[in-house]
Length: 113
Length: 112
Image (cartoon, rainbow over the protein chains, first blue to last red):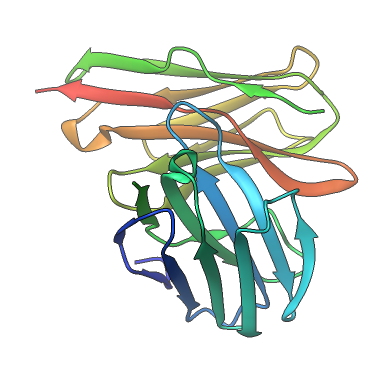
């Protein structure tokens, strides 16, 4: 176990649904990340939060809405997704200013129908 | 823009053999390079981190080398075991941009 948990582990949703992904880290870190991993593509960084403030939005469509209420929790709110958004969504954390040593959660496997 | 490539995408090797995984990157101005392991249904685990000033790092049966000038890194696995079956990802961090840039990975299968 890496100290980073994600729920749910699997999610199937229709294009009109609204759902949320949750990430929690028990490492005392102050930076958290959302990544998207699609088949045959490199991991894509989506969002970065440092001390609860969003410091990076990698041109992510607005149908993905992140929320970081505190340094231990990170959410990704999903609405009106497209089938091409089906992927593994990974959360990670690190202790600033160190971004290279990241601890990853197991991911949420998302299928959009 | 940094691009990281890993070839082959998949590799099958009989148990006990030594093997080499390859990683190449287009921008040699890297701060460090990491090798990760990803098991099905699990997140990424960092295996080895090589700083730009280093040539190699070793951990048990794993040895990672770095040749910055040619934009290449290799991960050598000695005496492979079925438990080594996983996807191996390479990632670099560039100077001035501390984000990790990942390759697409190599899916390794060790045949008992």
